[in-house]
Amino acid sequence: MDTLFSWFNRRIAAVYDLQPASSPTETLRCLGAPVELADTFALLTDCEIALKAATDGEVPDLECREKKRKRSTGQFYTPENLAARLVEISEPGLAGDILDPACGDGSFLMAMARQLAQTRSYPQMTQMAADELKGHWSVRFRPDAHRHSPIHGLREEPSSTKQSPGYSVIARSETTKQSLCEAGFLNRLHGFDIDLPALFICLTRLICAFPGCGWPSLAHRDFLTDPPARRYSVIIGNPPYRVNLDDSFKRRLAELYETGEGEKDLCTFFIEGSLRSLQPGGRLVMLTSHTYLVNHQCGRIRRFIFAGYHARALFMLPERFFAHAPGVLPVVLVADADQPPDNYLLKVFTSYSVADGWQQQYSAAARTFEEPSGLRRSIVSPQLQQVFSIMNGCERLGEHCRVGVGIQESLKRDGKVSRYVCDRQLSAAYRPVLRGRELAPFVINWEGNYIDYGPHLAYAGDEAIFAGPKILYQNIRNERLKIRLVAAYDEGRFFPKNSLSYVLARSADVSDLFVLGLLNSLLVNAWFSGNFHSFHITVTQVRQIPLPACSITLRQRIEKLVARLRQIPDGTPQWYKSFEQLNLMVCECYLGAGDHKQLLTICDNFLDQAAAL
Image (cartoon, rainbow, N blue to C red; front, side):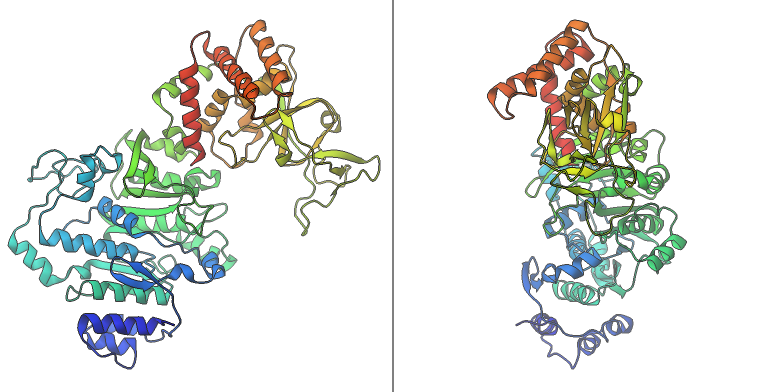
């Protein structure tokens, strides 16, 4: 079985032809490492490791450590190919210190070292420039960029070097190359981490892959609670994704940072701290969860970024990108420590593939992203924006319907998910109860449970409404479906649990079946997805849904189709045909008569993209 120290000794012996000393610290001293760096690992203990293949040979696989540890620390390691792409985006230039504030085993610092080693030694056309010739969104950049950029116009500083379109060549004199080599480009690299074995692996990889090129400055240190006084030209990294913080740690973070609110995620503090640690004109490239962009409790960090700094781009990565964190949707923020221009646009890149990078690009006003709906609104096409604008001229659902929430059993769970629910009607007080998972578009699939209904419930709602006819809709996002709104009609039998809310028409001009058709339609779901992104579908949001003014005849046709869809088995050709007819009629309600099939295709594609965010 390999151990951490035996792996280190093999790597050092192979590269430096040096027999291992009594400890890694002594070996590092023999190699000429700065005393402070060598002493960092004086208390490191040996441990068994598994190895994985990497560009620089076999390295310890920290993903194999126990799940409990990874869950508590929120560590998920960055694939090498992605790290290389993000290093190119960072445009490190020829000078300035570079920091990874949670460097782990060195994915980003290794990629950065390769970039510095290549750019010091020969002019080059970058891989992303080569991709530009193939027309990929991931590689848009100025042909005359002094520091090569994968985003067109990302840097505005003038350059004396002009090249043919699609290429980014950095011309350097032999004197420049020699001075860079003598200084040692590893000296530009800085890394912090609280995981000492990971930090040790990072150092070993760097000095073995680039011998004689200097020494990185690595510190066993918590970037968040012990922020650096130094300012950096580039900060790049993938900090931990962690929400469950102990109270003392939360209090310490609250003393140091101004953007923490609600359910605090470590990555938001890393973003704030990193932006503050940039020198003027410096760049942040940070891979995090997208939660801070869409959570209504993260308004402070969004304003901090998009109003206080020049945010350049967001690079979206697919769901389940990190196999060990399937619930995390990763996003890369690129922001410069500059005053943001007035009314500037932020680019959003989507549709990532390992081979080709990001394939689609959208633009939206940067201030849009200060709102939790900004990310979704940024991917709304111009045609859909025009349609939504027409819809927004309508009256709102809340003006004609009552919208409310279902039963809440208790304010705090005591170990049982359902204290008052059972599978039998034990007395007259027990009422048929419905949960969100028992709802599908247009239909109810009751599992046969009852709830002990009465004043002992934390929120019992209005019994008269629950006992009568009403529309029920899921108020928690159904991740199995791309649509956000899932609604069905209850003729007056079921009492909804708190994962369901209700809509009750209270105007003679609006029927429950007509509203049900709107809620389940592609167009209304596209409008809703383009305006709201929260995990919960709130009463306030549903009240804002546009309610079209259309002819009685058209409303009656929709009601008839909805009644049919409630009876037809889902997934049958007849169901799909009726659903398409419904969607076309809903489009006609909002937009008037016409051929709306292309619009439905656009809505369908948009819902696919929005569901991935």
